[in-house]
Amino acid sequence: MDERVMQPPAILSPYHRFTRSEWAALRADTPLTLTLEDLNRLRSLSEPLSIDEVIEIYLPLSRLLALYVAATQGLYKATHRFLGTEDGKVPYIIGVAGSVAAGKSTLARVMCALLSRWPNTPKVQLVTTDGFLHPNAVLAAEGLMDRKGFPESYDSMALVNFLSDVKAGTRNVRAPVYSHLTYDIMPDEFVAVDRPDILIVEGLNVLQPGRPLKDGRASAFVSDFFDFSVYLDADENDLEQWYIARFQRLRQTAFRDPRSYFRKYADLSDAEAETMARDIWTRINLRNLHDNILPTRARASLVLTKDADHSIQTVELRKL
Image 1 (cartoon, helix red, strand yellow):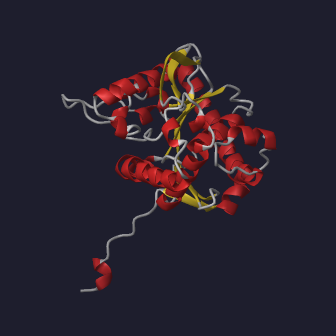
Image 2 (cartoon, helix red, strand yellow):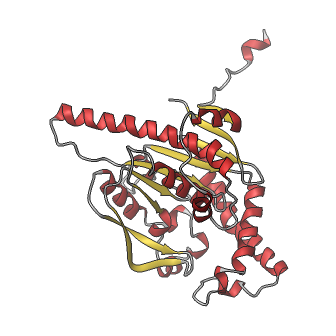
Image 3 (cartoon, helix red, strand yellow):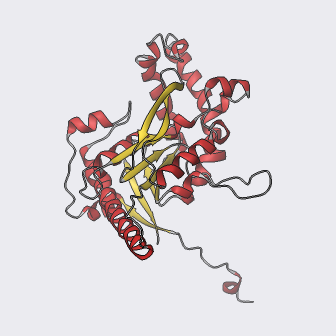
C-alpha cells in the first residue's frame, strides 16, 4: 500500500503567525501617543518596556482593536435600528490571560492607555480578577491558601454577574479591590465600572471554560463575555527566573512595609530568598500554569510570545 495514503492530514493552525517585524509593519499611520514618562508609570516592577516595543507591538495591536471595536459598535447600532430600540451602549470587553510573572499587568495598562486615545473609544477601564478572589479568611477555612490563583480560589459567580451587568450596560457596576500589600481583599472598597467603551479584564484564568453545574446544566463563564482576548506567553524557565527576580526586588521594597503580608521574607538572605521563591513558584505557580492557565492558550484571539529578555518576538492572530 502506498505509504502516502496512510499519512494523517496536516492540521492547519487556527492562527496567522507574524514575526516582530511583520507585525510592526501593520502599524500603518497609528501615532505614538505615549511618552517615556508614561511608559515608566505604566510598566510593572522588573518589567522592561521600551518605546520600540510600544511602536512595534502595541501600536499595531491598538490599531487592530480600534478597527474591531468600530465594527462591533456598527453591528450594535444596526441591531438596535432593526429592533427599533434605543441605541444603548454595549461595552467591548477584552480579556488578558497568562502566567504569574508574564507581564499581564503591564500589557493591560499599556493597552488601556493606548485605546483610550482613539476617538471612538475615549472611555477605557481596567479591572483585574484579583478583586474576585475569596478573602483570605474564606480561603484559610477551606484549606485553599496554597491554591490562591487557582480557579477554585475565585468567587466565579460574582465575577460572571459583574461582567453580565457590565455587558448589559448597567451604570456603576462595582468590582471589589485587592491589595497586593496585605495580600487580601480590601473590605468595603470598590471600583465603579460605568458603561465604558472598552473594559479590559486581566487575570490568570480568565480564559477557563465553564464547569457544568451539579444538576448537569451548562453555566456561563468569564470568557463568554469577551469580544477579544490576549494570551501572554513565555517559556516556563524564563517565567521562573522573572518570578525569582521580582521576589528579590520586592524584598527591598514592598516587603519591608510593616503592613505587608510578606514582611517575613524581607530579612532573608539572598540565597534563602531564592530558595523560598523557587519553592513558591514550583509548588504553586508552575502547577497552576500547567493545570489551568496554559491549557487555555488555544482559546485566545491573540497570542503574544516573549523572549528571555521580556521582548515580544512573535504574534499569533486567530483566523476569522
